[in-house]
Image (cartoon, rainbow, N blue to C red; front, top):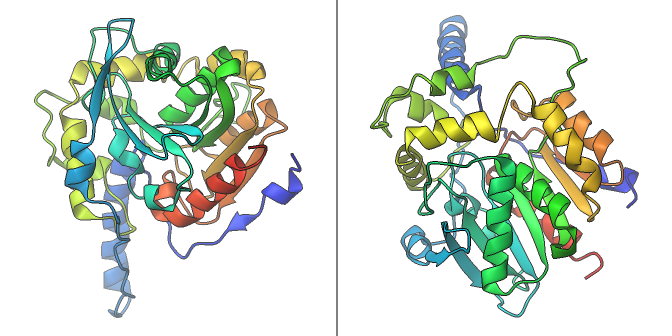
Length: 337
């Protein structure tokens, strides 16, 4: 693919922090301090009105459409199968502490020609929550078994954050089952020889402080789901409630097994050469989690990948500019099909 043609920036007037951002609690508190200082230092001015983006999908109907399916490894996955059943299958894989509802803002803008398969990964949503195991290969194998049961031989795989790591793992281990890959807010890990700087916020330490039952309305959870860009409050409430329903042992198992801070680079880099499917990399330019070194490591590992940067957006660009991200995905998936 022609790299220069795919590095065009999509403009946006707004940016938002990640729903998954490891820095959200820290930045949320910092934002309060900065805001208070700003109020004291400058005259009050009317803020420009910001409209909450309409979801265009009934959340009750969406949640009610979820089905359960038994896999041959003994696990049960919850999923939603919607769209044109005879169309090209597209699997959408959400991120850490999320669920299939994560894709609701973008769904109305995806092409109607696709069969969309939205998954609750193991340990999340309504899927089973086993005592083990939560490595990226465990997650990817579940996706493979789901496609086996559904009779889908080959699919486009779209993933966000942790879901993008699952998506690339699927494509690496089952290339014959993979048509295209879209990795949103993904990474090849932080190079160990890169500049050392302290983390803006030690999200792992904060998660390890959680106690059960997790309070969906606690300051941590409010901060975990905070966003400076208006998002439908009922959508956020449901997401936060579902995340609080995930057992703490699962939060910790995923943190330790799928997102190992001490070996993420070597683990991810070791298998990325296997990813041969056409790949699109999407980031928001202001993503606070996947900073430039983490992005560059993935670009270096996948030099033929297309790249789309959404200027001014954060870790969840498909929430901030759902139409723009969907258009980029539609255009990419239509290539060669």
